[in-house]
Length: 298
Image 1 (cartoon, rainbow, N blue to C red):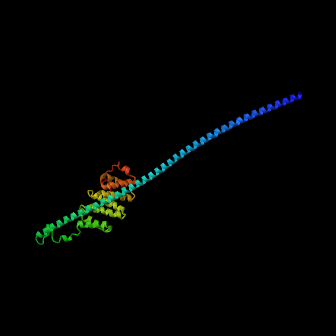
Image 2 (image 1 turned 90 degrees about the vertical axis):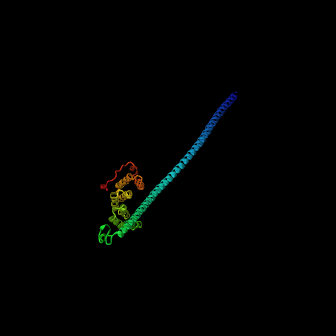
Image 3 (image 1 turned 120 degrees about the vertical axis):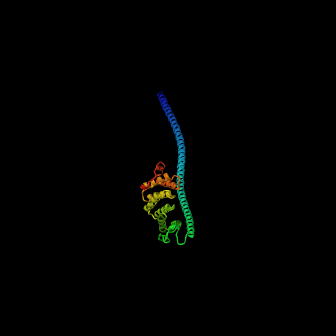
């Protein structure tokens, strides 16, 4: 009887232990399932986050690439604009130089025409003198002068011939010979209409030879002694250039502004504005009111 009770007790104990073990195993399995489910959820979340991150990074890369392309295009556009502006500036300078050359050629043609007219006038005077000589009594001179009076006067080439010779030699770059001819013209025909032109070309010859101080003096004579001549604006322009060559920037700029004020519609004023622009002094040129310089200041 005791033996059976002991077996029954052992069986009950074994059953209790097994039941407890099964319960613990079931609980552990349930926890493992929960952990596995949470890990899966976390992995899914991580995958979605990675996908979202990759998509956003792709978008940012595309935007960055677009911005880089835009910057490159802007850089190319700026370079093209700079080239275009540089070309326009060069073309404008070339046009100004071309206009200057054409104006100078026109002045020379007018000078030559004046010289030819003076030659025709001289021929008419000679014809009139010859006619008077024919009608005068033998042995007398026109105007009552004695026959030997004219022989004491130094002879010089006619005005038109002397001026044309000087202009021809100037255009042929025979500077020394042209200088002698223009100087002689001023000595003999200093009161004629072309005297101011001859003085201007003396300044041009000095400028060619790099004698900028001498050029300024010659241009000043044009401005002071022949203010109504057709070389006045050109003389003031070239005087300004000579002063700039001498390093006298302020004086050169003042002459350019004075030229624009005195002859605003002349081709020389166009050249003066272009030179002021290159000197960086164009902004103040339009505001400055430069009085007409007096001879005492030259």
